[in-house]
Length: 255
Image (cartoon, rainbow, N blue to C red; front, side, top):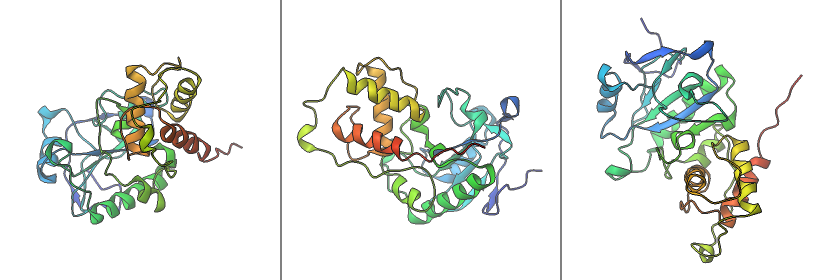
């Protein structure tokens, strides 16, 4: 019988869609999703349906109620085709949290305060128990650029960082004049940005061209770290926000 891993869990709804973490991997990422469904109840039903072939560790409804569906020690099926920092089996190294929101296709409402408080509390609890670093708290869109856009531009990463969840830096303001013009499509700035994106964890090659794949990754970066304009272009705001983010990474202490 499944037992809650966190004291914050208010309901249990076990999903059969689970597996074993590869090679005894321990969680080192927290991954946020939105459900993309009209209610948490429907999302939980789908995530527990054997034919869906999807699951997650936790669902947080719009009132903040937390339901656990898969034990943290097990491998939930939430990330799909994904990549981060050279890892392609994201399900084996992550804990997946589904946050109730109908998503972009159904109006994309704001995330309620009560819900965000639960997101923060649960994330702090998980991160503390598994020693998960702030920069390892990610969006589904970060690990699956182009394929996924959740939890999206309305998700309040800045507030979460303020209350101790995730890595964040204040975005450099967007220059309205620069939008759509004067943006380089090749050269040293692009190569530098590709190198920094790769250093942070995104799956992108360093070749100095603003090709389609690079634009998709830049758009994913913007969704998370510069949501004021999401266009996949390497403007000054995006470039300098990326540099600022890298510079603010916590120092790794080794003994």
